[in-house]
Image (cartoon, rainbow, N blue to C red; front, top):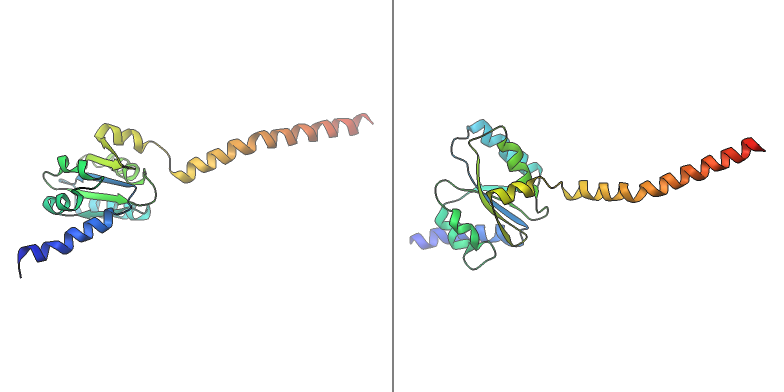
Amino acid sequence: MAKVELKKPIVEEISELLNGAATAVVVDYRGLTVAQDTELRRELREAGVVYKVYKNTMINFAIKGTEFEDLAQHLEGPTAIAVCKDDATAAARVIYKFAKNAEALEVKGGIVDGTYYDEPGLKKLANIPSREVLLSKLLGSMQSPITNFARVIKQIAEKDEEAA
């Protein structure tokens, strides 16, 4: 069996993983202990992020001609890729949170919603709260004026009852 036939399914797997993804972040995991790597994988899995280690050449073949092609400049040394299809900031958020305690984890770069970000850019994106948190803040700010108005009306009604 030719080497190309062995590599083709791996390239297709990476292509399928990236197909429709909102974000892809590449990291250098050199220096992480097994326990740290296991913990990182668990946290990413809980956030809905797929984290895999592939050969750089396989990733390079899979991203050629796609919106993820800018990641090719970071495909040197040990590389893991974190992909999320739903939440655009989940991968960066979890990785940066984890990297605070594990200095060995190095973020190389990433693509978020079709836009390339280097390490500092991804760090800024990681500080954006999740979609659910943003929606709850929006809902809270929308409900606040209504709640305050209801309180004022109730206080006026109570004041009128006391006067009568």
